[in-house]
Length: 436
Image 1 (cartoon, rainbow, N blue to C red):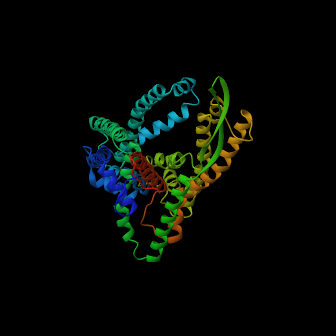
Image 2 (image 1 turned 90 degrees about the vertical axis):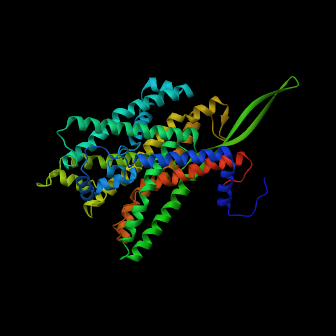
Image 3 (image 1 turned 180 degrees about the vertical axis):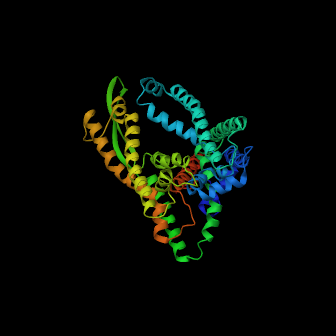
C-alpha cells in the first residue's frame, strides 16, 4: 500500500481517483454526459403555451410530484420530459415476461448472447411505450390549452420528439455504463432527481414560520437515509460447501471449500416502489384526462383520492394503498427473481451444498424459508420508506416540501453503487478506497 500524507479518507480517495488517468477519464466522461443531459432537459418543444403550462402544474400537485423525477424537464415540456422511464417500464415488462414465455426463458439461459437479444427486444419495446406515454402527456396539455389540439402536424412532431428524447437519454446512459462510472441509466435518473433538490430546498425556506417542524422534518429525512443505507447493504450469509476431486500421484483426493451465499434483505431494490407507484397513480392520471373545471364530478373525486398531495382524510387512502402495494410487490418481485436465479439447482450442478441440509428439495425448501423471512424485513422497510413523506408532513405540518421516497431510494442507491465501483477501481490499483 502506498504511503500518503494524512488526509480525510474520502478526500484522499478522490485525489487518488483523479491521479489515475483512466479513472479520471471515466469520471470526467460521466460528469460531461450529465451536463449534456441537463442541457437537453432545457430544450423546449415547439407550439407549447408556457403560461398555460405553468398554470397546469400549479393546479395539479400530482404533475408537480412527477416533475421531480425529470428534474424540471416535464414542467418545461422539453424533449426530455419523459426521461428514461419508458425504458424502465419496458425492462420491468421483460422481467415479468421472461419466466412466463418459453422462448424468452430459453434466451435468458444462453449466456451473454441471449442477454443481448433480450436487451435488444427491450429497446424496441421502449419505442411504442414512449409514444403512448408521450401522447398521454400531450393530451393532458391539450385539454389544459397549452397545445393546439387541432394541429395534427404539431401533435406528430411533439410525440416523435419525445420518443427521440427518450432514445437519446437511454443512449447517453449506455455510454456512461460503457465508458464512465456506474450504471448509466440509474445515473441519468439520479441526475434528474438531484436537479430538483435546489428548488426543494428553496421551498423549505418557505416553512421558516414553523422552525421546529422543519427541524423534525430534516431529522426524519436523515433517519430515513440511514435506514436506506443499512437495509440496502444488509444481507444474510448462507454457508455453502463445495466438494471437489483432485488427482495427485495417481490417486484421487476429495477436497472441500467453504464459501457463502449473500442473500440481501432488500433484494428487490426500488422496483417494488416503481410498481406500486405506477398502480396507485394510474387511476388519478387517467381520471385527470376527464376532469371538467366547470363541472366537478366523479373524475375529480378519483383524482383527489389517488393524489399524494390531497389533505386528510381522503389523502390517507392514497398512502395506505401505496403501503399495502409496496408490501405485496416486494414479495412478488423477490419470488420472481428468486425463481429465475434457481439457486438450489445451481448449487446441485456445481457440487455445492448447505451444511446439514440435503441437496434438492430440502435445499429448495430451506432457501425459500430464508427468503420469506428476510423479505418481511425488506418489505416493511420499503413500505415505511414509501409512506415516509406522508408521515413527515403529518407529524411536522410542513406542507411546502414535496419529497419523494422513491427518489431518495434511487439517489442513495446510485451513490452507494458508484462509490463501490470507484472503490473496486482504487483497490485494484493498490490504493485505499472510500470504505474501510
